[in-house]
Length: 157
Image: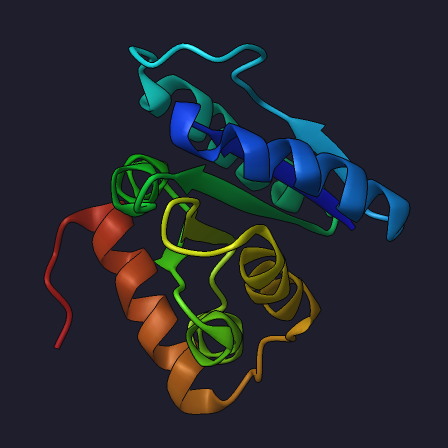
């Protein structure tokens, strides 16, 4: 599986750890930046580029997910969710990470690097990457309604 990764300055330590850790675990990790610490960086560019890459890979039939990191993960999740076809979920424990994949078929996880130890954040991300989508009819239907709204602007029933 290919994993697209982006962060802001607050998630750089965790990002560097994940590049090595996930690469060793067999994931094809693509780091969308930043490449150096800058406390004034603007994370939307990095997160949007990672999200665009996830969508492009999935459209091409490549198994791909994404990870966006920040101090809280909130802004990064918001930025990623602006990309059509992205379902980015903020996860703060193992259950929210698994449910994001299992119920919502989230294709990007957002994690706050200042909210967790490196070990805890790594466990949350590993749970997300390992969890399959359930394909339950109710979840497929709900995700379809979100996608329809995204494409048309019409609020679903």
